[in-house]
Amino acid sequence: QVQLVESGGGLVQAGASLRLSCAASGPTFSSYGMGWFRQAPGKEREFVAYFNWSGTGTYYADSVKGRFTISRDNAKKTVYLQMNSLKPEDTAIYFCAARRPRTTTPRAAREYDYWGQGTQVTVSS
Image (cartoon, rainbow, N blue to C red; front, side):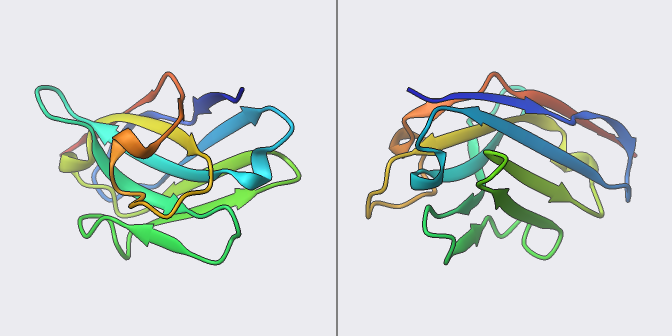
């Protein structure tokens, strides 16, 4: 069982930066692939970024590529999402998610086993 707790959201102006954190509990954090998703009001949850369990691969949505960076610290059982050059369209609830090793796409929310409660990010214009 893995529990995930996000933090670091807030209200910022366009162009600013935020760093989200996701603290995980459980003894096998290093064996999980970790992802970030977001959900804006009235929209479906969408993939943002992913860091695989082996630490050899990261994936990003086209909408955030070059602006967002996902990283993980297995010793601290924490995954981060550094968000730079924020835009109003980045406004959403951001969710951290974990999945056991598998070969299926990391871009689909259904492929994850555990979810955090989310943290709100609001970007004003």
